[in-house]
Amino acid sequence: MDISRPDLLKKKKKRSIVTWSVVTTVLVVIFVVVINLDFRANTVNRDQIWTAEVKKGDMTRTVEGRGSLVVDNAQWVSSRSSGSVSTVHVLPGKWMKKGDIIVTLSNPELEELSRRSKLELDMAQAELTSSRSRLQGDLLALKSSLKELEERAKMARIDADIAIELNRDGLSSDLEKKQAMIRTEQLDARLELEEERLAFREDSIEPELAVAKTQVALAESQHELLISQVEALVIRANTSGILQKLTLEAGMLVNAGDQIAQVADPRRLKAVLRVAEVQARSLAAGQVALVNTRTSGRLGGTVSRVDPNVEVGTVAVDIIFNELLPEGCRADQTVDGVITLDHLSSIVYVDRPPMVLDNESVQIFKLSSDESSAQRVLTKFGKASVSMIEVISGLTPGDKIIVSDTSRWDEFDQIEIK
Image (tube, rainbow, N blue to C red):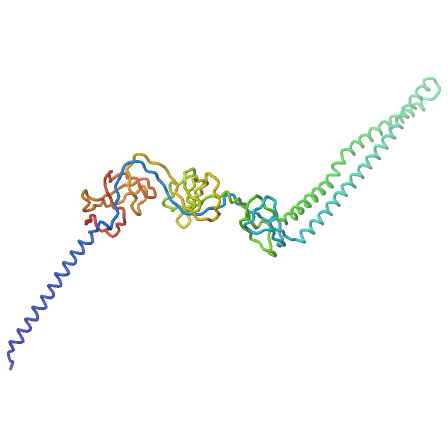
């Protein structure tokens, strides 16, 4: 048999009411917090934003970069011979004149080859002299024989003339006359052949000597090459300046063509600035630059070269100074500079918002007239500088925009300013 308990029923009902009251209160609190969070999410304090006013006027486009001073006329000294380092005459930092000795190499095998080449040259020259003497002796013998033959032919003509006279006077027979004339004709024919032989021999001397001359020329060329290689064992500065680098020490082996030293005039330095890739689009040779050397003030210069390649997000720009650098400037010294791209006249411009590139359309927060709120507006930008950018459309002079980071309000088209 069940027993009725009214007191338990009251307690259960009271507990249910309390539970629902707590749940309701929590839901109300959550609702209020969410509303406040949403309200606070698109509300910003004025001191937390930076604003800029759109203006109209002239704008100078510039880009900035940081880099170092680099020797402009550095000359590498290369070895033209192989060998081992026997003596290092100077160390980096010393001023050198053109022709001063830097390093002396040793190569006994090369020196021995040079001596042998001299002997081979002497032998080739002796052979040429011997051949020329032999040929000239043969030529003199031919000339002597020809001279003797000329005398005999002359005497034969005289004898023939006498025989003709005697035969005319009846003092000699026709046979004697005929014999004398035949001897004359034979000697004249032989004389003509010997003259041709002599002429041929004279013309053939140089062709016969050509081989010997070629051997002399080859030996002479080889000897000169080896002499130059021996002389190149003494490595000298190829320009005047300070020895910047030296890669050798005594005992090290050097191959022909190795770069062993660098000489440069420290008074001729250039600045190499690294400019961010996104800012380097309008860079060109001939643009004016101002370089801060940090030790000797700001110096004017001109862009001489823009590297066509991008390295680690930057582009190298060479700047030649308009005057000699003052004392105290050194190679590898850190510098920074500003390069003037161009001057734009009578344009609408504003301070450059972060992450905005030139010739780009971007949603920008524009302040209301009472500056109590900011509304997104689509703005088309033109040419950009380091700190300013041209406005093509979307904004007018006098408008104010937020130029600080607005990424936290990407989901809102309007924000409240208090």
